[in-house]
Image (cartoon, rainbow, N blue to C red; front, side, top):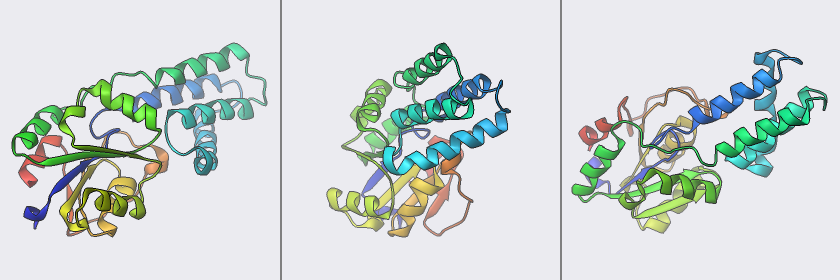
Length: 229
């Protein structure tokens, strides 16, 4: 059945390069700054609650995360966190717009091999447009992809629209990503194939229970994608 695959779509963050690891560092710094007012566990709970509340309006990405960090800091501290500490958190968040998007192990070699096999490859990722575009540029991987789609969310609707734009049937698409919630489940729901590559850390709002499916492959190393194909 995999011979019918015409397009391989790749998630970007935490699939092609490390993203969440950098966010986790800023989150830990926030919890440290909030220690005079609360413990780290409650600080994490408060941040996730803020992100969940803001998501319908702000969506995903660094800018949304920055506003949620500052809002959480002010709320939990009762608006008493010194301005220099808030400024420090803001600077750390700004750094998330420039961190190195070095390809994860086996990514470059695998993309080269797939390109030599004349596989049609695209990037399908969610987040803030300019931020995601800049990450792809910094990664040096842009030349491998025939098409890039950056969307505010990845649900069945967005996956179906991607297939329409690419001129393929859902069964001709293979989605590769680290998130069961955003990359795998909606792809399978429309009839596409999926490859799940777990990352060592997952954003709290992307957690999902693992499951099996006849059109789902789970691998541990990016290079295993070549064996599947």
